[in-house]
Length: 384
Ligand code: PLP
Image (tube, rainbow, N blue to C red; front, side, top):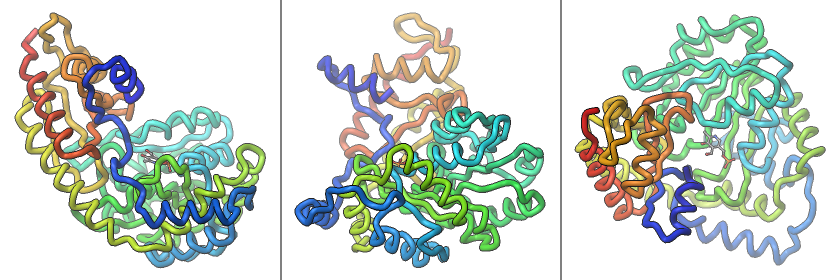
């Protein structure tokens, strides 16, 4: 959808994209300056595959100070985005037919990464009624002798679900009876929390640290998506395997990005309060404006991340002014793109049909215009 939006923009169409999973803020100045100085100081060459000693030390410190997770330098690494770590984790551990449990709605790439590695995604579908969260009962019913991974993502893209420490502990209770199952704690939205407190999985259940891969990165916390720098902590055997895979594919992540990420992790974070308060304002603005699109769209207020997951079941089977029937969330997303000039992503891409995901990390006036257009376009739908 993001590409379709860009294509229409290139044709001169007025399109507002609410499809991109990135902040519209600039990378903070002190990080930019550290990177420029890094280039000038010659940080332009190959580094250790899993990251420079400086970056690894910053990652060790970050996990200890922010999350109470105690890793040493053999238990952390950096890569070209959190995405590469997740992908390599699947490649390194999944044998043909192994299963990875994920919670729908889930980030689009999880299922495909598992498939590429020869495994089977096992999708547990949640709904807005329980805040899009996995329950211990659902988890215990899904584990089989082939289960290799449980993939957790809190705050969640796209639902914004945020698990409490108690909820994570209840999931850990189930896993204690299944020692073969590893856990991914994808914490990439850690800093984008409005209501509630972030907890990493192994932080809530410290005995799980030996079988948890804690994945994070600078993309969302520091507005650094284009720098492509993610990092992880986990058991030394797994980190070694991921570094081995990385050494035969992409080698080290960009040396300049490593300098920038070190500055990000070690530098001030006061700007985050301003960012969060602006994002919270946008979230509330979008929820308030989109309420006028009910019953075609129903939107709850998510506690975290920068997405709204709108239930669009009320628009299915409606007809557009051009006479086309909306048969699916994808049809509705297509209609909104072409008739309202707003791009969003259909929930079916996240394993959750009849939803749309709106990313609200765009300027307040663009967001307001986009929401007004969506409401108008929904108002034009008629019963088929
Ligand atoms: N995990 C989730 C849930 C995401 O939404 C994203 C990016 O959108 C990533 C991981 C990948 O982040 P990175 O930019 O570090 O590769």
